[in-house]
Figure 1 (cartoon, helix red, strand yellow):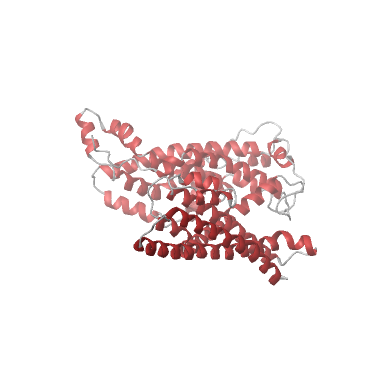
Figure 2 (tube, one colour):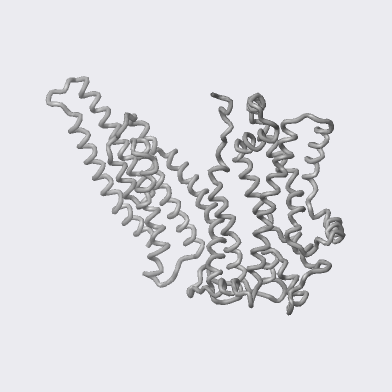
Length: 449
């Protein structure tokens, strides 16, 4: 059966390929021919003809091989079950589906390469390449807009180039599947009806019941947890950036006794994780009556982020030329004005990275909040009609509150998934807003002019 399908695929793909190659060869001959060619012209023309014939034959052999494999993969994924009523082994189906996805992106990449080499723009080729086969043929047939050697275009079809593209896109598709599958499963679970762990990748019947439960204060305290986490993240971001940047500026710009020892001490502190001091932190917070207060966690988050971020910002500030400081001082600026009006604007990329990391920390931390927020503080103002357990839960952060849905005897996995999706929204928006600042460097050439 497979032998017959292979022969049919070869006939469908190779025969038209050879026919088209012959037409291209005849067209080439008509364009380069002359009524009375000289002996030299005839010899050169014959050499080009041989090279073109081998070139087009080589192309169509590659097209035939890829086409046969693609045809067989399509048969395994879509046709076999429809004809025989039984699906092939799952592993074979998944491998064929993976190959089809990689091949789709390879042909899109070829279309982008053709468009770029011929002067039409890589983005245009990539967009048209999203239409399978058509985008590739569109730019393969188009004339060149700029002076490009034929060998440069022919390299696109080379075996080395095709193998490299397949390997690169196979790796990218594999990484994409690893990253996207859990996200898609979580999104699907958040719309599922059952409360237990979903057994299907995507639910058949979608519902918003899980999101309604989260925002119904009579059933959960999700809104309180969200407020606690958001304000904690906001304070951690603002105070963390200001405090760490100020300290890094002092270490980067000033000379004082103990500077080297201080930097080494801060560097050594990175070796010890924060949970090693849990007992000391609990005793300290209990002494100052800070247990059970979510915003008090700001002190720990800011202090714990100092070692790594201080060295990071210090290294960045040292790249900013001191000429800017001296020029500003000649114009009458003091140290504070230099810091806020010159250093901070030039440090936007690194400050954006630190701000995003500081904002993310409270959303994903479970150990510290669960350890320090499960105790009612002294002289707590408990609302009327609320018991101690409910008041304690109201002080939780999202990480602690969401874990309650799936801990112990609870099995509300779909509600947990809905909460996880909502938690991801502010972090995603923040990354999108600060994306251009995270990748750009604006210090190059700052002393010019």
